[in-house]
Image 1 (spheres, rainbow, N blue to C red):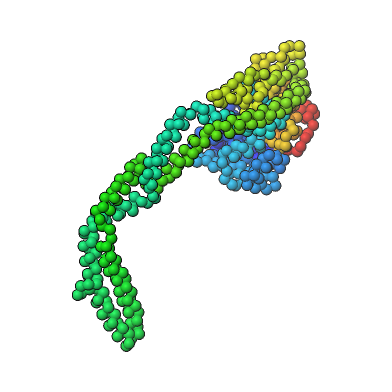
Image 2: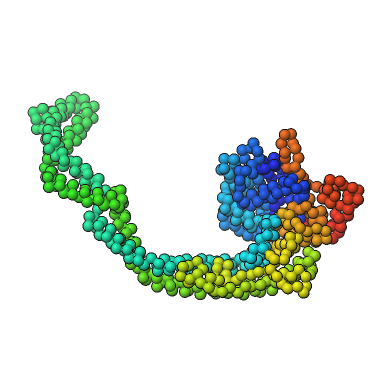
Length: 578
């Protein structure tokens, strides 16, 4: 249930706060006053997409906050718990920030959230219905969805949908196998050639870099031998050899140690230097003994040339070539196993087809039971909305199985789909004795409004959404007089079980509200602002009179407004406290 809606810098709204009640909340105002902005703001806290164009002119950002009570809305509470969001005393605060820079943020109980998660949560918190929902009744697939909502078939629908997706994917894989057999054989030949080419060379990771280093050494062997020989002589063999001098220096330091022990540290340094230089001298001496042959240099060049050809074709390094060869081998194994895979896929497809058919048949049987209950229940709704003479039937269309649903070979019959094997249509007869005809062909605008209201009052009635909010945005369009009063009374009845927010232009509907808010647009300084305030007492009477009489409100109109409010109170017992 929505307790509080706070809006700042959104469209014409500078700042406002609306505290809603538990039952029927009415919003009225002149056309263009901004009632739709309030509904749009609620849509934002329920996860609707945001646009920078909604930000009030000359402002950098807009903020919308919604405070909900979700103690009785078990699906929403479960979703929050699974996602790791903590709630305190069943309270939920959603904050939506829209920035002109495009980097908006969403907070759920002060924790960052994504727009997709908020949308999933919003679907469990509230349901917004407007005139577009009335037009949706003219869409045939919507009839099946409404019937499933009435029957609470969410789990059965999800099961059929999941099985159909698996079935269609298996059919697609089978199609690919059959359609690409020639391509598969060409691919096998190519992979075998590439694998053989790499296997002949057998590159090793890092080998190219090591060979390039060896090539540089071999190419400069004469200069390198000369330099190492000269280094050995300077260190060891010449008359002024460095190591000879260090040996003599060591003797001097040992003699000094006899007189001053502090020279032991210097002696250690000299001995360390001598040992290190001996290593250098012997390395220089032995270096010339390595393989500096021209044959080795030629072999290195040939190996580098072979590696270079592979690298140019299959990667940028020996390691990438090795990985490419390994991937080719894996792809080859998979292609060679395709014949076995086709047999396994065919068997899997048959099992999935049978599984889907069982699931879809269970759903079809349940829908036909629901249709009978729906037809009985809708009669009571029609009676409550002054459509006692109207009759409605649910017709299930038998579709030719055909072939080709989602696969080129036509493995899946055309009448099999993610929603099952059914197509349902609502037929109506406005008056008893008339033939049943498609709703889309004979329903008037006013009838569509009441039909939508009737269906919504039935759908989800047995759900766990005790604290769910229903928003009706001008769903009473096209009706008036006594019918408008029945619509208001029906909205009031729905509000006994769920919180209802209703935007209306009809006084006959507005009088049934537990809380009545007026939306107005006024000039404040050089700017235009939309404001919302709760009406009570005489203010509410004046608003109802305005809705009845327009600009000129006579004493008679005012008395009529008072009578309508009084009659609404008498006809409607009070429910939960607001």
